Amino acid sequence: EARKPVLLWFTDAILVNIGATALRPDKAKVSNPQTLQNISVVLLKLCEPFMNNPSRIHPGFVWSPDYNGGIFPTSGDDAVSRLGENTGTCPDPYDVKNKFIPQCFFLCARSLHLSVVASSSFHSNIARQVNHAAWNIRQRNGDVANDANLNHYLSMQYSNEVSLLAPEMLSDALQFFNLSAGFLVGMTDKALPFMPEHMIVDICDFIVFVTRFSAKQMEGVELGNVFKVVVKLLSPKYASTVRNYNLRAKLGDVLHDVYLPPDRAGRSLVPASVSCDPKTGGQPYLLSDTIAQETLAPSLLLLYGEVEHTGYYEKMGHRANIASVLQYLWESKEHRSAFRRITQNKDSFIKFANGIMNETNSLIVTVMEKLPEIRRVQLQMANPQEWAALSEEQRETTSSRHEENEQDVKRALPLCNKTIKMLGFLSTDSDIRSLFLLDELCPRLVNMLLHVLTKLVGAKGMELKVDNPESYNFQPKEMLTDLCEIFSSYADSLVFQEHFAKSGYYKRELMAKAVKTCTKLNLLKDASMVLFAALPGEVEKMSKTLEDDDALMEGAPDEFLDPLMITFMKDPVLLPTSGTVIDRSTITQHLLNDPCDPFNRKELSIDMVKPATELKQRMTEWLEKKQVERQNKMEE
Image (cartoon, rainbow, N blue to C red; front, side):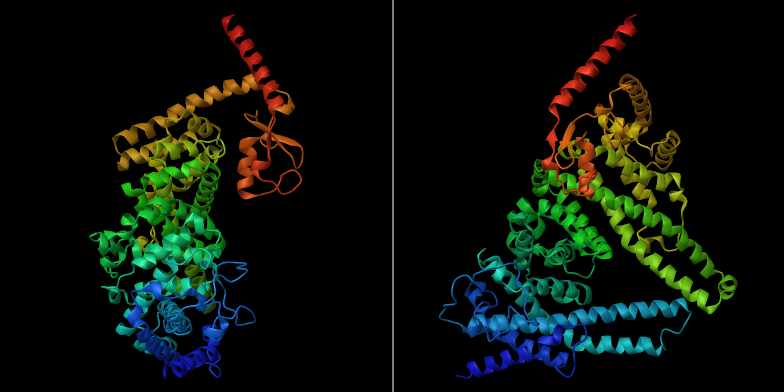
């Protein structure tokens, strides 16, 4: 009989503390964090008997206010967001004999959201403030040990850790989140959209938090259900259910931070056992899970594009994590067939590839512009007389700008390195390589590669020096190696050579210097070096051929020319929105970045264009006639 009043008290405690997740909670209206954590500790203990049996939890508790006491409101300022949008009519009625277990589970889920998860976010912010304050003090040559402001932040951090990082509580919470994941994995597709979105967010945020602040406590904790729910929600089947891009990005981060083997993720503290499935003899979940083998590679390629919506700086970290996981999967035979299947969806692959190339161009510009400025300030700070000659205001301004430049480079370089590496390993597959050679992609690929090569070789990027380059992930030699490997992958393709010769970035001197640098530093292996060294000569031959073709097409009627590129069209198509005829490759490239007709700004998609078959026939006949005329002249 004590159950009902005790659980009613917990329900009331949750309702009065609904504001605990605010950025700055009103201390007059919510309990202190330790009280909320104590409530969660008790509820975790109540969940222990069914911690390994998610099938005993009925989801109907969420959509039954008569039983949940209003802790999952659907309207008002305190409304709890659902996983799906426009959920509509509630699924099956909440009709179970044992209502105690679902009540304990969902009360615990809400309590953890208001207490432990909220406190972990606060703790992460305090840790960032501590690092930032210490950096500023060191830049001023101040006394880190006796700075009052820093010590204030440190006292907050240490006091918070006492309760938040208690080993037993961490272990219980991790087990609960694995239970929660198992519950979501086994749920019907009809019920899933009605679940509180924070249940997934909390799983991601808390587990990633533990990997960063108390990874050793994860030893012996089984998180197989968490892996399964991440793979499930990232899969194309559920992409329309989980539309929150920030949440989907978090799922990708969990794969990297928790399930990528420590030696690949650069994490030395996370126990190796966490990423491995004990049921398969200790094989990594990423390799042993059959559903992951089917869906994960295409899911991550889709996610790579989706994180564009998470913010300029945030997307860099997300994409660096995704690229690392993709490389690990690529090197595993279990996933190779899934990678090949991505070639079956041409439009999706073109969007993904376009994103990679846009990203690389942007990142290399950021890096090569800011590294020389970082070096200049490093030398200035290292010269006591020159630094002292500046006013206090000048030193603060210079230090602030220097910190911003460092942060920009530290965000950009890891992703730049990994993006080029990803492009490299994808290009080793003939099917994927054939997609990059499409007219819609190949010109952009060539321009991007030459742009990066210009920044590395043409702008003396190989000679650029900074203090502690490893802290920025600045590895120009490795980057040049990866870049030239990509060149060699396409070097024997006539299509690649043609676009290479047409590119405005192409300069004979640049390629000669690149070949010389690769040879001198022994960057490429035998076969790759032969192909790369031969590329400049092949491009020169192609340039001569193109000159002959241009001469052949001289005097072509204007209707045969692309209206934007002023080149002879290969595949003319009609834009129904403006009535303009344009080359298919030109409009495809345009629509990748702008979904509007370039001639009148009306909404347009590639599936709306129509082949200009009659014009194509006239172009073919005209070109054949010109070829015959040229052949006759040669024979004369």
